[in-house]
Image (tube, rainbow, N blue to C red; front, side):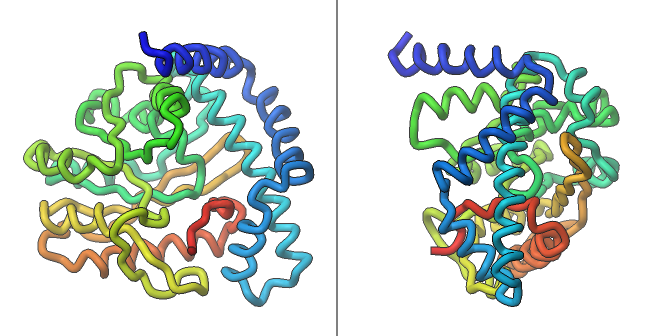
Length: 299
């Protein structure tokens, strides 16, 4: 065992142990963490305030501060839910009992998966750290959808120890789940499985770290986007779905699929990306607290 693996094993074990606490207890810890990030560390405060102010230029300063305060509370919730998720060791029933994620129309995903591969474009709304359990949130998936056909793209962390810890945390309820795919390897992965009708779940709203493509105006700002998933769908003839993630209440999210393209073969990837950003912007305007404002989205 290497030093990195040893450190990851110790850190992951401690995280899993804490994750066995009841979610309501972890929310209490998360509330304290949110206060500490906001009032003591001032964690990315300038990024949060700048992003909100530029996205909503007509918003009064006091309202910007209130939205920022509410956002830090959300960060505390995300922290608590992510640790709790890691404590669901092989226990999908725990996820279903909590109903932390529920689908409104899973039949739409199943419909297009029966015909072709699917690119399901999510965002940094909801809690993106919980998507390793996507197969086990829905009764209709089990017995209908093969878990080996579902892949969730993720971005590797800079720290190799943290990367290993969170890799295991992201699939804790389904330790047999082998569908976590690093986003830099997505193209090769998809091409190799183009005839198997795979389902890919990926965040499409991050700032691109390689090739940048113009989105146009998004949240009142000129924006660059990642075209990879949309280009793959266009080349391979996949369906493209938008995955809406709504926060219903603390500890409960709702997932809804919306069709961007039934068959993207030969379609303009930039137009597909623009449709995605239009849907995402409408969701953020409806519930701005539910999005990741501390992300350095605009450089």
